[in-house]
Image (spheres, rainbow, N blue to C red):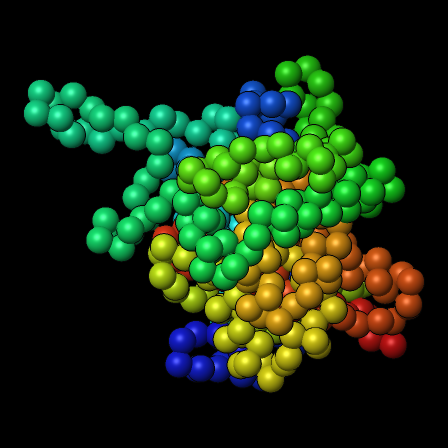
Length: 409
């Protein structure tokens, strides 16, 4: 497996006992914050996904080596451990919570893949979760002269001399720097909704969703995609973050509650489990960029990853990129050399919502689903799949996969 670390270091995987592969991936419905899932805490979202993953993969509870979970705005306390026990895993199964903000879910999967590559034939549950609806209020102690706490809405991502812009302001910076017009942003957002609506109506999402009980109701579907969102309506949205700007509520994602996770193990162990297919992890990379242009981070990481693997953008069959804002999605895809039409075939976060720590894992769940559909249409087909996400503070993570059948002929 290529490590994707700065400087181009590579770690060769000599045998199937060290080749990481994802054999199952599931998610909850993705629902607007303070909406259908507002009564569920992060562990309540995640535990059913972990339980369902074990059921579909055939992994015994006691065979789980670790649970690695990304989370961005939770209350701490090692959420991964809490959710693992809530899911019924034995007390000797540990848990690790990862915070790389928006990239947390994808980075948790990347970390688990490196643990597999380190040896031991372990089985890991990895992914991310966010309950924005129940996230704790935050305050700094002794922030005022009188000793009273001072509440704040978000953490600082970098020292103030680096700018540390709010996400919407950073999206405007990217739009201006890379010449992404309002019209193109609106068009991209409308297409995302149209694709997500079509996928939802076709039942495309259903096999990957774990239904949840919330407020006495069974929640089985995403609630974000809007069939009514057309160009005319999009044009009426005013700038949301900068006066005279191009980034609006319509071409920005909305906050969402969600969880998503995968089963990742070695190729050797996957075959022992009888897994039919999976996403082999070919490499991963995380890059840092100017925090003022934080939205471009994913493309820098992906470029480096592709170069390290000796691949060109045209070689990649499937691309899932977190659409926090249309401006940064377009800027990243074009910087990477990927036609935006080829990305997010079933819509993205502009339509589905952005569950912060969960979003990177949702990308991987979507890729496994899409790759399986391609293989159903053309039996035996293998495909290259790329997941990438830009991250607050000026970073980006990218992971490359190869979908393939795992059972030997």
